[in-house]
Amino acid sequence: MKQLMLVIVCVAAAVMLGCVPSLQPLYSEKDPILLAPLAGTWVSENGKEKFTFKADEQEIKYEVTCTDEEGGTGKLEARLLRLGKHLFLDTTVSDLPEVKCAYPKCHLLPVHLFTKITIEGDVLRYATLDFGWIKNGIEKKKITLRHEAMKDMTFLTASTKELQEFVRAHADEKDAFQDSKELRRKK
Image (cartoon, rainbow, N blue to C red; front, side):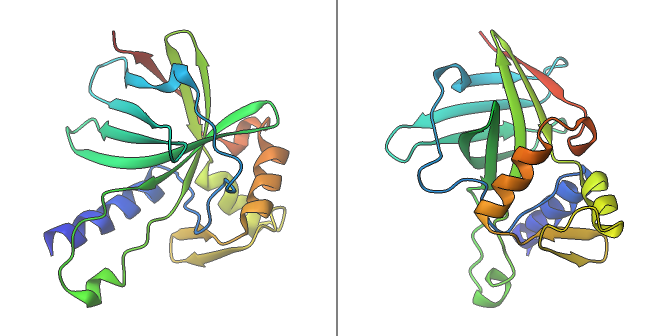
């Protein structure tokens, strides 16, 4: 039960942080790339948030170990891809809690989150799609991307191709992404 609550809290936190979960990935089979400068450990200015990227060259992905500001840790699976002139990470949880009962297990859903990144030397900047911008665009019918809305949550249900077209079209719009956060390479 404790593990199930962790997943529920993580999904709620993603929404509260302004993230937009998608049922489909942003990448197709041919899209993922590895970029040597991404591998390693990146920390926030206050040192409380930490992301360690380890490249998996066989599956063309990164295993990411992350620590949040409260000291909670978790593992993500990340695929890096280039859409136009921008780099994006598609992340999904890789350590879903082990649930021994089949009924709660059916409720766990590893969604995808999309993050625009830039790497300049020892600085990594990242920004996720902005939930408020998406929600507002859907309400005003300016965004027609397939989705499902439930209470205060919106899940993108569009295909990978549709997601790529959408993200590529809005990658340069300032309001489409949250303010970027900065991490520094830990040496």
